[in-house]
Image (cartoon, rainbow, N blue to C red; front, side):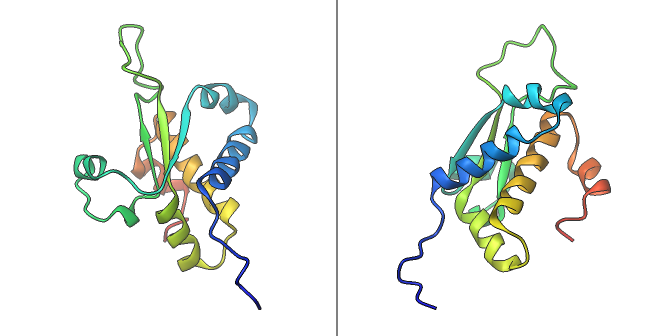
Length: 134
């Protein structure tokens, strides 16, 4: 197979996959998810990794940044909209390492995991019903 004309999916292509996944959410989740900004970056910034106690940007595929819906209050003065960050290079590395899922499946999975945090689920809550990373 000639790979000369193949390139890794771009930031814009991952963004398309993420928005398609968000648009496919069921009605009870669609409206609250639409209020979350989706940001696609190459890798997590060093300050973001430091806040998480992480060193390797290739270990972080996604991150929810905001106040979960279960903790929001009318008294909150948000600094900005809730955001989900997806990190292209880490996602592509995991996609290649796995070799058994499509890129759309992986982007959807990471995005849904981060939306679960927006809806108030902890990592332990998510792990109890989702065995994706085992």
